[in-house]
Amino acid sequence: MSFKLERVKTGIPGLDELLYGGIPKRNVVLLSGGPGTGKTIFGQQYLYYGLQHGEPGVLVALEEHPVQIRRHMAVFGWDVRKYEEEGMFAIVDAFTGGIGEAAKRERYVVRSVDDVMELLDVLKQAIRDVGAQRVVIDSVSTLYLTKPSVARSIMMQLKRVLSGLGTTAILVSQVSVTERGFGGPGVEHAADGIIRLDLDEVGGELVRTLIIWKMRGTKHDMRRHPFEITDKGIVVYPNKVVRIRGDRIQIEEA
Image (cartoon, rainbow, N blue to C red):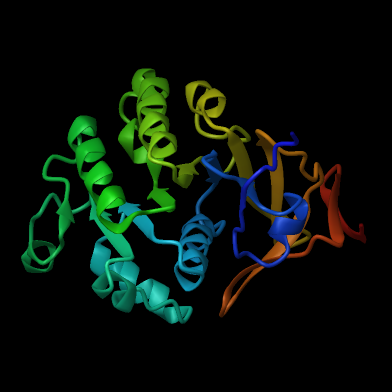
């Protein structure tokens, strides 16, 4: 009996081709990159594509007010409010601590932002309530920024919950501009997949590139590809490859 691998389409034009059809189901993927690389947009686009195709989702907000998130998503034409009303989408507010008028209207609030156990409880509740198949945590780095020694254990706890409840998750990981890692050794080893977004200056111009470092359960493209952020979200160019030669970047046909 042959086993058919279930895949989750990212909904990001060009990326699923590089993943041979999508992310293997239940994988926990680290989306790593410096500031301004498009990580937040990537996560939101992944969730919205799921909603449009009948797959409920949860977004854990650790770095931005839920009101701002809804506003920013609407800029790309991703209006999540109707999906919230239909019980298909939820934002877990792990940013405000429940402080402020707008925060009082949020349904899923983590009162103590430093309490990982509380976060996991609220997250589990939100996943079960909406029947989430996709989860994005933006950003997971916030959970262990001040205490890197617990990074691996936090990742493993998250992974148990996310994978155990059958979701396919993207965890946004912040790295500094010059850092070439993915957010710490414990984090990298715990993740099933790593997608890295970069923004490099070449000859006075900024170039956006994406590379898939690893993806458990599937073969994947091993080359660096250019991508753009358009008014409809991220578009990856699978037929173009970026080669870095010294201090020069060349974009060639794949």
